[in-house]
Length: 134
View 1 (cartoon, rainbow, N blue to C red):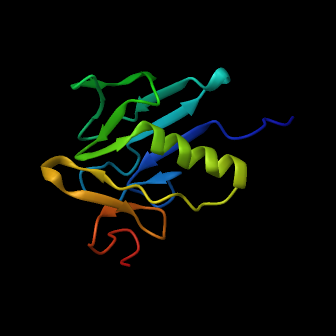
View 2: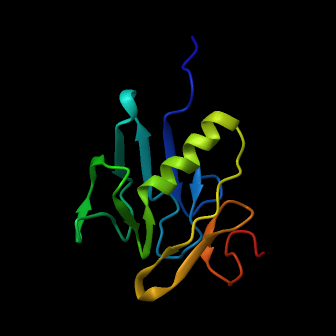
């Protein structure tokens, strides 16, 4: 039976996650993003230590699971990313079946900037990657 393209993606500190985030505030398996039929987005916190929040209209709301919008920002531990960047990253994986993901530079709490390392992990900009050391 052919299940078609992957529609469920893991997010976390482990390099084996579909979207690895190299930050100690992020749990090894922090959350899961599911792209449903029609492109609806469903985000589930995987019992992470520091929680998952959706930032919409200037308000942060902690979730255990909820539908999210491409225009939302999401917070995994101390790392804040645009939902649209996460969707673009996983859709690229579905289309290309390759682990490469676009560089994502977004503000983190305290004004710190983050970027995607060559290994795919998200790390503090200009600092060594905790996942691969580069």
